[in-house]
Length: 186
Image (tube, rainbow, N blue to C red):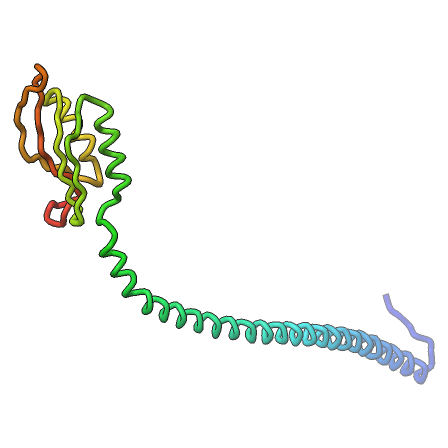
C-alpha cells in the first residue's frame, strides 16, 4: 500500500519538527524529574549519613572516656595487688595447707559407718594428720582407711598391733592422713 500525503511541503516539515520537539521535550522532562528525584534522594542520604557520623563521633568520644577510666582502674588494681601481696603471703603461712572442716567431716563420717574408734587425731601445720585408733577387725580398718583416703586425701598406714581390751580383741593402728605430695604421682 502506498501512502499519499496531500499536505503542502511547508506544513509537512512543521509536523515533523513538532514531533521531534515534543519527543525531546518529553525526554527532557523525564530526565529533569529523574535528576531532581536523584538529587533529593542523595541530599537526604547525605543528611542521614552526617547524622550517623555525628552519633559515631559522640560514641567514640564516650568510648575514649571509658578506655581512660578502664586504664586508670587497671593501674589501681595493680597498685592494690602490689599492696596486698605481702598480706597474701602472710595469710598463706597462717592458713593450714588442708581444709580442716572437710578433713574432720570425712574422718567423722568414716568412723560412724563401722566399728572404728579413734584414740588420737593430731593436726599439724605441715598438713600431715597422724591418726591412731582401734578397729574390731581388719575388714573394718580397711573400710575406714579406704573411706578416709578418698580424693583429695591420701592415707599411709603406719603400724598395726592387736590388743585385748575388756575381753575383746581389737586392732590398734597408727596411720597418717594428708594431701598427696608432688612425689606421690598425684
